[in-house]
Image (cartoon, rainbow, N blue to C red; front, side, top):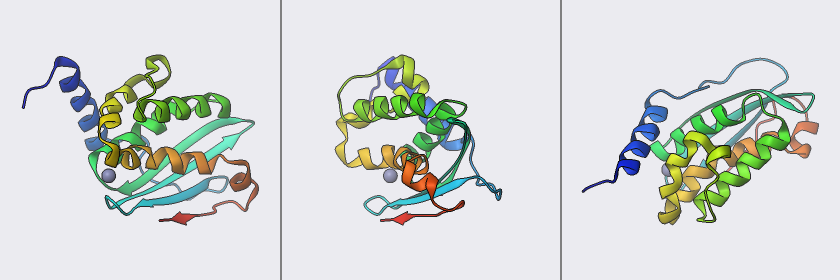
Length: 156
Ligand code: ZN
């Protein structure tokens, strides 16, 4: 197999996040909303935990197991949305969904996550790449936040 320079660079970024995930590990503190999602088609299992204060995502954590695309994507997601307003985080989430569904790449919003752009050509892996983002999306949804703290939703 031969890769172009970009593809090699992207693989390195993905493997770096897979081997050295950012913000990995859940915390046992009040004020966090945790959502647990599974992707049975690949065996990915992901929990995302978010703390929101005054419309800003103050902390995001993730934990789980799965393929390199799923785990690396969750790590990149946490890095991208930490410290952002909910609006900015939603914009990044949408940019990521657009990228993996082949609808354009916003480098400014997605930063290192552009390394996952190849997923757009691998439809079965889109679920892997978006699992962490979907869990994150649920942690900041109005309905979830309005529920009791520490809520865990398991969806298969
Ligand atoms: Zn997967």
